[in-house]
Image 1 (spheres, one colour):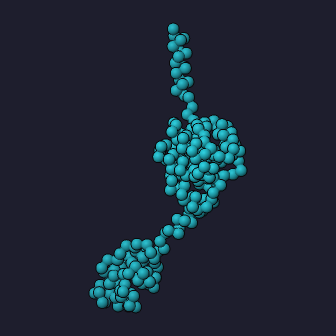
Image 2: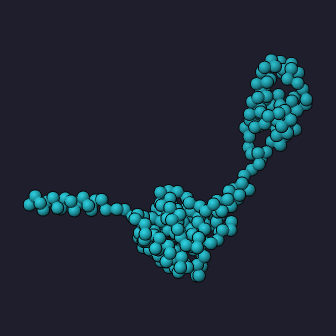
Image 3: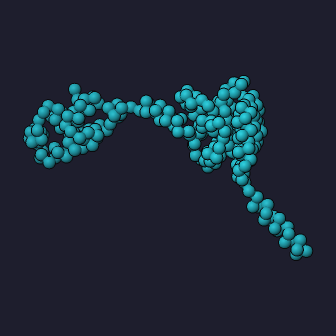
Length: 234
């Protein structure tokens, strides 16, 4: 009786220690790449190939089943765009990380994939290697793996939409700082400004230093030029 209980306890313990696999779903129409990816996943001790599809229609149908942890999706499919599947996967499988794996490296595809909810964007190699498996684990752990070439394009796009230093909203000067700035633009010295405002030269210098910090400049000429761009000086 005791032996039986011990066996059952060990069986229960073994069941409790059953490994948890990363469930990977795949949307890929290239049979060679599909087979290579399947082999690579099967060789991992912590992954299982959860579901596969080779077309847009098949990918959408796949989403009706149990969710995967990571979806690796091509977007150039014979019957339409894989982005439709990416978008639906983010809606139907909200806990699934979606990695786009494709040969398209142009800005339009990259930005569209990100807009659809992709958490990573990988350019295909001739055959998926160990780095691809690292990327899947990274995505499952909350990362956003992106191929270096794609990352450069995303950063370039981001920079294009950044305002220039002159266009960024800067903290407005106080009333006294405006008075000092106006007189600086008129060419008055620190002592002359102090006399006009009936304050000490030290106080004027303090205002000027604050103006420099607010405008992120280092000289009077830069301060006046930037202030005019901001509309603080007529």
